[in-house]
Image (tube, rainbow, N blue to C red; front, side, top):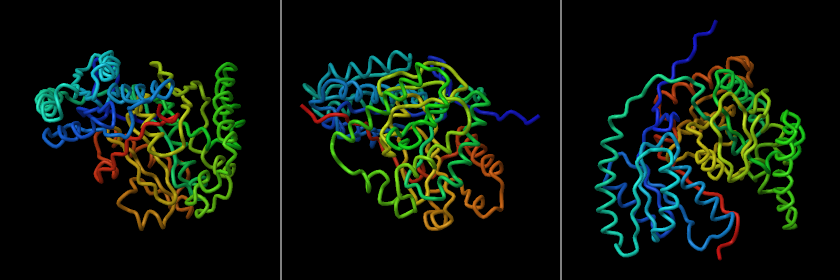
Length: 388
């Protein structure tokens, strides 16, 4: 029998398990980015998460921003969080949700203080949090305690033929060990939506998935646009994917073979469970999707790329996997797992999948990904509406 992989992670106050140990500096709005970045420059061990939103948003769009910001602070890779906002009430809304995890969180409003006072006060608190976090030790945990997400980007013909099926093998194995795996890219399932739906055993969840998918497509069609060039992208077309249907059939290869037992809309929380494959309603844009997966609780992301997508994230490691030998050679600094020998028939699908699985275990145990070393810290909340 195969030896069970050993994972050492950080067990948080609410029992969730992270694979990184950051103190997050979370600006609630674009006006607070400078103060958050100011603190990050003074205090080693902190990660600022600037973004362009948070002013005059409303309704579901505002709820989604709060969901992303609070979910990021609540992510198990975060040991403690500092929330900075121009207005205290909105900052408190984000901080209060993070505090439900039991981890330390502090709020610093800019109105009535100014950037320099906020930077000084927040820096002193961040210093305390970083020193406390530095004493947290990795502990042996079960692989079933991890939530992992998957997505592809800058896909080409090598993605659907090799890197996605090999990732699907790894996904099956992760689920067999009890891990939860998240996938999404709603518009990018077009042409394969019925195949995905057929893998959802629960009729109510299947109906929920199709409702989410139809709403997404109906909105796109209501704009009266031809998405060709956006979906598939110019890069996809250059890589040999001529239609969204062709792209989707390659995309779903990375889902493996397990039943889909969880369907989450934008604001739905991932309930504590294990051993399941879960659909998340997301944009197909790389940074937006990874950002939402992290807010749902993913602590590690597997990202397949054909033409060479370079996306990363501030708090979750993003593992780049490619089967395109040209991309592996020219963009070697971005690629963590090379499976191009699968297309050359030098290795089997199983061997390529094992390579991805084993690398996932190494990253979970602390190995830095290329995106982490190259400081690709893309954080991009999905925005639904125009601002008020």
